[in-house]
Length: 191
Ligand code: 6PG
Ligand code: NI
Image (cartoon, rainbow, N blue to C red; front, side, top):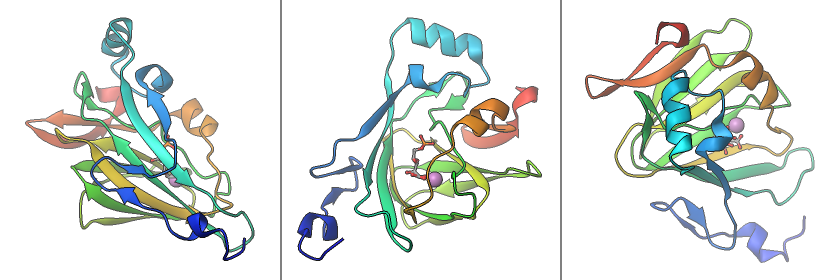
C-alpha cells in the first residue's frame, strides 16, 4: 500500500446509519440466517411473510500484508424472531489467533462470545462508549437489543478471515432473548 491512495487512508462514515461513504455494504437478509434462531417455527413463518433486511457490513480492506489491519462498520436493524433479537450470522476467525476490537457507535446491542473449545459463553453489552475485546479463538455474534439500528465498528488483523462453517455446524450454545424487557443469555436447548 502506498500513501498516494488517499481513500485508503481516510474514510468518512455515518455512525447512526452504520455506512461508509463509497463502500457498498454486504447485506444479510433473514433468509441468510438459516439455523441461527432457535425458534425455527417463528423463523419460517416470518420468512414466508417476506425476507426483511437484518444487517449490513461495510468492510475497508486496503491491504493484506503481515501487520495490516482491516475494519468494518456494521448496522443491525431492530427486530426479533420470537424472543430472539435480530443478530449476525456469527463466526470465528479463519486465522484462529486473530483478535478483534468492537466499538459501539449508536443504538443498543449485545455480543455473544463463545470459546470454541470449552463452549464457555459470555454476553456483553455493545453500545456507544463501549469497547469490546474479542480474543482469538472466540466465536462472536452481535445482536440489536434496542428499538433503533445498532451500529458498531470492528477492527481486526487483515489475515483474520471469516469461518462461518464451523460455527454453523455446531451453532452457538446459547441464544440471547428478550426476557422481562431485558436481554438474557440462555442455553439454546432450553428455549
Ligand atoms: C469481522 C467482524 C465484523 C462482522 C460483522 C458481521 O470479523 O469482520 O467481526 O465486521 O463481520 O459483525 O457479522 P458476521 O460476519 O458474522 O456476519
Ligand atoms: Ni470477527
